[in-house]
Image (tube, rainbow, N blue to C red; front, top):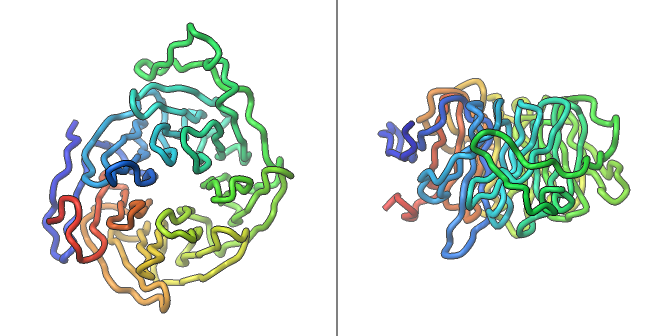
Amino acid sequence: MATECSYVTEPTKAVPLTCHGHSRPITHLSFSSVLEDDQYYLISACKDNNPMLRDGVTGDWIGTFIGHKGAVWQARLSSDASFAATGSADFSAKIWDTHTGECLHTLTHAHIVRAVAFPSQPRPQLVATGGFEKKLRIFDLSRSSANNSASSSPTSVDGNSPPSPTPGIEIGPGVHGGNIKSVIWSTNLNILITAADDKFVRWWDIRSRSVAAMYELEGIPGTCELDSISSNPSLSVAAGKSAYFFSGTQPGQLLKKITTSKDIAAVALHAESRKLVTGGGGDTWVRVYDFDDGSELEVHKGHHGPIWTVSFSPDGKLYATGSEDGTVKLWKFGSDPYGLWR
């Protein structure tokens, strides 16, 4: 299996790095924060069951997490990139050690897990999940019996995983009217955000286990992500032909809605430059829009299938796209030399 990155000749001025290695459609991409020496990492979720860890600057393959027995719908790194969380169609979420590739915890569910989220803190001991059970849960990883048993030997080679943590705490039983597509841990660690197929984005107060705010979208949500670049982050949500931008600190506060002529499956905001990047299920093009007036600024060709996920790097110097074609592409953002673009 090829795992290297190669340049692809483009008719437009944007020449992306193409990262090979997956064999099925890419479902989700997520970056870590910037670590020492300006290094950061990228994790990709894929329907081939095998999430991959990459160097975020170059796209070079670092490792593959082996153990899921179904499509992986979402994958996230902890802010310090020490842990990875994955949610899968095999009815489980898994927590991984990114240094060794070992599976530390397997969280068994009764249906497909579509979403996972860590709080933004080093070596987090909590993880939230959501999916086809329509239940938002929080698991305390520190209470796992695996952590208290010297004989427990984590492994990911043969899929035999360590004992699960104690059953998760459900937040807001019976409220979600559709499958949970995304779970986001807010910068306020007492707030969790969900986007579901019932077309609602909900902000949950963990302390009261109740809805603090909610907003009804005009379509079923695609991506739902917190902007990690800005010092004042916002929440970006794709739904139908629109991109919604909410305050990252005030639950439910809509800052702006941009409606286009194209279906939007994925959106990422670069607040400093006042631009947003989108991908859609209706074509294979990456589009860049002006945040202030909603005008289309750039169209980039390179993928050979619909684009389901878009994410900016934590330094805002590039963005990654993941497609039905099974590839991850890294696109330089801005005119200055960066990484392998010299």
